[in-house]
Length: 340
Ligand code: PLP
Image 1 (tube, rainbow, N blue to C red):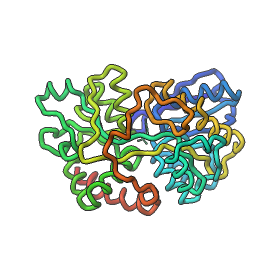
Image 2 (image 1 turned 90 degrees about the vertical axis):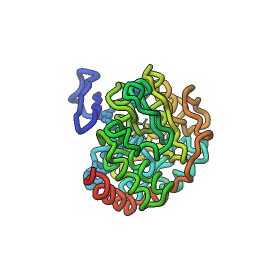
Image 3 (image 1 turned 135 degrees about the vertical axis):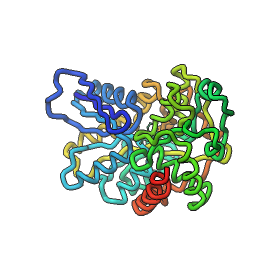
């Protein structure tokens, strides 16, 4: 029974939750949601089933790379959480096993559509909108006005005061890249990102890191999912949450079983539990604020009401295709990272 949390650029912290750390695992899960939710899900599922679970936190793009690398000898059974378009890319590369969760009929239409889009290989488990959060005390101390739009973030006054994740590792950042392409058109999105890069203090590995850094006062503005910024605000940070004025994109977080998983029965049990009301409510119980896919699960009390946010009609099929992802990431590396 082990838990590994990835913190930023490749650092890993082992938290051994029992003395039984060397025993064989009944189920191996890679988890892309917040560490707190990963830990709670592991504990509750183990308690319920008596199975011994290895749960490791990684960013979404890192999980895709790992599942790809292990294609011929998979060590991971379940990929739980992380942005759905990356799961769709794995489905498109034939890396996932089809499975319809028992609670499928209770899931909301967006989750059912997502499942069908994946060819029955990945199930939607939560949703959330992209945006940013700023530390109001930090910006006041630096004497700079607050941003409310994507375009504001490129203003020279924010030089060195913004963090965003790197889309090569982070599903949050890939959602941002795809959102901007859909909002602005591809060439204009890359011009915008190249201008924004001049203000970026750090491209983080993980999607939640920028808003966590803003909460700690290490930077002014963190680009992230809005529910991540809500979590920081609820924890007491002077965080103001922004749904950008031009509109924004959203994610459908997903769960999938890896093709050739060594523990397929336990993997199916985990997926069923992840979509049950009890499994879905481990989100709020661990202080997280995503919108659950199961209509019978209760909504975390502070979950943002995404119906109030101006939203692009996010094209999961296009931005979930392996070719599109590869092409956009190559372009990001050349036109944004290498010029920053
Ligand atoms: N944390 C939360 C709360 C999320 O909703 C998601 C996306 O599914 C992630 C993390 C994804 O993390 P990353 O951007 O590091 O892949």
